[in-house]
Length: 170
Image 1 (tube, rainbow, N blue to C red):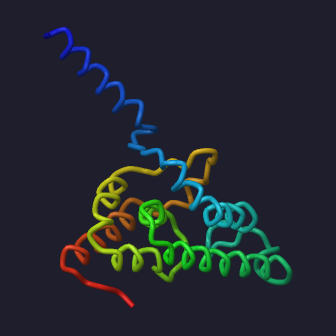
Image 2 (image 1 turned 30 degrees about the horizontal axis):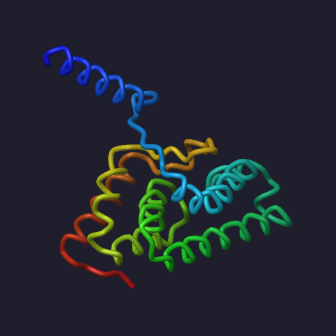
């Protein structure tokens, strides 16, 4: 019996270590959830690749002209993608909205509002991703797309607190 307990301890310890990269704990997003996220996050990745982070356009092609138009179109599509995701009332969409809270997807806060409006069913997902970085299967998104730890933590705390109080957002 003691040998079995030791075996379980080793398996759990190795599993915890395997779930960390560069000192960060990660959680692999289920495929059904990842399929909902990829269209939105792929657009963000295109923006980062072509233009750099928002407010820091590192290529003149995104400041004006056709490059700027492409960038604006991508941001519009990102907003539309989040709105479409928020309109879906499935457990996969619930989880996907929480995962989006780990990434910078614009200044609207629509993903956070949708999570708060869904209420208590989002709490388990908020707790799952709060201290961990999501890994999207079949993609390697730029780390610069993620919210920094402080911003993510604040957003998650706000959502958890609002849900526990029963608040709703417009």
